[in-house]
Amino acid sequence: APAKAPTPAPAAATETSAVAAGPSREERRVKMTRMRKTIARTLKESQNTAAMLTTFQEVDMSNIMDLRKQYKDEFESAHGVKLGFMGAFVKASAYALQQLPAVNGVIDDKTNEIVYRDYVDVSVAVASPRGLVVPVVRNAQNMTINQVEQTIGELALKARNDELGMDEMEGGTFTITNGGVFGSMLSTPIINRSYGGQSAILGMHFTKPRPVVLKNGEIGIRPVMYLALSYDHRLVDGRESVTFLCMVRDQIEDPRRLILECQ
Image (cartoon, rainbow, N blue to C red; front, side):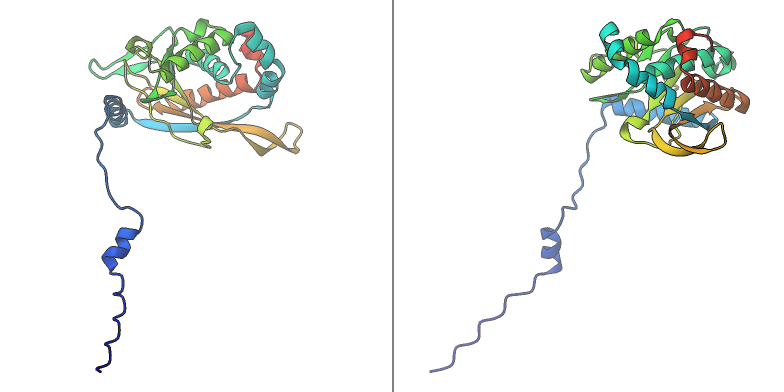
């Protein structure tokens, strides 16, 4: 009887089948939401309009962290809101903005005029289900720290529940954003020119133990935060930007200045 033909070896896997079995390389296209389109448009307009520059400063957070640790429970019991650092930065910024009107002002490009404001409305960047929003703490210069913290808490809750109205996001004169909550060490934030226009934005960052030279000349470890101020150099000069950051730094490093309002 004739011998049986040998069973053929299985065909080697082709390159196509190997790729198909690996990770997906598909692409998806998703329509931009109205919020994302607005964010994209306003950020690009700001970048194209302002002569944007960023300057930096470092802050020793020791004293304000000690203050928070010592009084946070009493503060929450008295005011019904947690004591964070944003309230102190809003108040410190409000004081500095009143001393440096250009940082709180804006150029009206349609009329070639400078608009100076006697009030301080601070836009505070908050994450929401639809993206980053910037509700406004109005007349921050007249508020106490607990009033600022209460207002921020109420606005943040509305943002998380997607309940913010347009009137609560319009008209800020200055913005503070805190990338530190996500672990950012340093950034160059883009000026918020929507809803009337601004000329500067303060970026807070992650607080980290760092070696520093103490007043007695020795080296010590202190919790340090880097601050970044992006500003429109058409209106704000380097002197004002550096002075602003130094004013904020001095108040945060000695929070008694904030509490006693004797900056």
